Length: 375
Image (cartoon, rainbow, N blue to C red; front, side, top):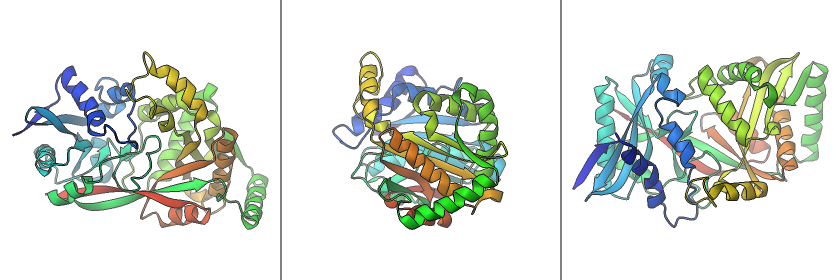
């Protein structure tokens, strides 16, 4: 017998958070997220998402044992900015049982319908600015930091329920020997760099000591440069500021680069050290009391990164700013002993970005899928 129970108590939330560790036990490619980060995401009083939207959490029990979980999400910012009467599901996990997954998806559809919405998409945890999509190819290696990993059978669970593909997202492996390494690339880069710098364009790292002021133009360029992308929603001031403050704790300043024209920000690129190479050794997901020592030890041994996002204002595109930023972030990753990185997500319909990454040596290694069901 399958029972669906809404998460209401601290005990319920604990089971919601701990279920993935049970589901993926023994899987060498699964990386446990830090519990502190997960608890923050579900703290309705502290996490900025809840200032404008809501999420209800559910657990599925089969024969009194937790067998799955799901979050049902109403993103009011999405409805406001797109006019689309769509809800979302996220944080989905399930045993390989169609009855369990159907019960979870049934409650999600029912809740979304009760909100007066006409379709549901997912997974999104909570938005496309967060982790989203189910991995559908590339199960042979662990995910890089802040990227999803899931069971191979999830695609089948979605299709059997009636969901259809909405969009695929790609991850590209960027190896140091391939990134803009040829002599012809070097000549092109120098030509672009000389022209840009002679025209007043400069490149620099973020200044964490002046973070409060730095995030103002950073957020403006972030929102403006991404506004045409599928599924993108502008981040609020609080959302952006809290993300920047979290990155300050884990991301070296040289991995957040700005391009400026006459001291006005025109573009940026952000890379992350692959902290999953650290978290993979902290199987409990808890930094204290002993996990902190593993964190301090293994963070010095990180050999991989993630190129998180690139953004350039429209009027400065096709001028080589993107290529210079890619080259500089490569050099800065190298200075940290990091010689490979994954560039993700790249949307399948972003033909230009896919073309650029492939031309500079990126190799597609993972694919993720977001699904949609209309009522």
